[in-house]
Length: 310
Ligand SMILES: CC(C)(C)CCc1c(C(=O)O)[nH]c(=O)[nH]c1=O
Image (cartoon, rainbow, N blue to C red):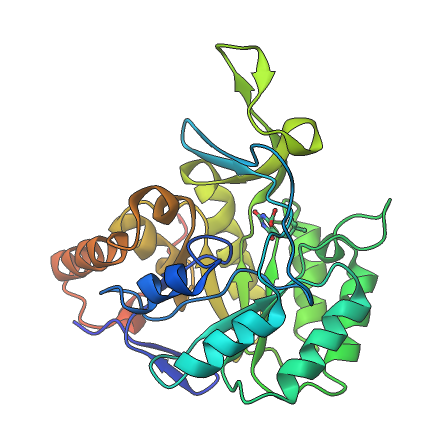
């Protein structure tokens, strides 16, 4: 059974990696993913130009069927993650995630990466806020097109975008129309489902401190939305734009489902947070068992082959 995939000429010897933000803040965490059996790659915590503490107070919580977070982009700064990825980029193909809080920050960071010795893949996190009072960038279609125009006016290394979930067919059409106009290596879908709210039944309070308890949802609870976004974008994007499926992966069947919907790689967030890097070997073994049951030797025998009903 081969679990290989390729993006922008990079060959991955298996399809699993961490989701940005989980197990990827420090070199020690990144090393654990790099060395984990069953992880084909890693992505860094989304970087800002300077390091950030992120939000104060309890900012991550477990809930039935998943997690809620409002971390606030705590990270050690772009140079830290550039240094790490440059040091290790010959061991596996690596993803460097960036998340500027302004367009200027994103462009400045991409110029730094363009001029650096990093030759891996960049994941541009478009879930970042735009100007206050406007929705996050990826929900502001004109701004999304504008930033990609500016990025691709100078950035020539492999680049993809991390997208929040969309919930309206017209929005799938609109974002795909924009993305198809650019030489993107990949799209990673989905980021957490924004601004959920969880109540603690013991205390009648919210469960995280920032934003009055509003936060991004991850885990099992987001799987149907994640699969819908993988499927919808696979159906609409040019085949050269590969897809990293993220959201709701807890077992091999979830990995299989992401691939069946069209994913080339599959990333794991909430479950990795709770289980640790050993999860990658378990997920791979479970995926291989499902493929064996179905008589598949290669992922491309079923990738994107979700069937509809007559
Ligand atoms: C939500 C932002 C802080 C704008 C970006 C970073 C981020 C965070 C975060 O650092 O709070 N959490 C997520 O689930 N997804 C993200 O993309």
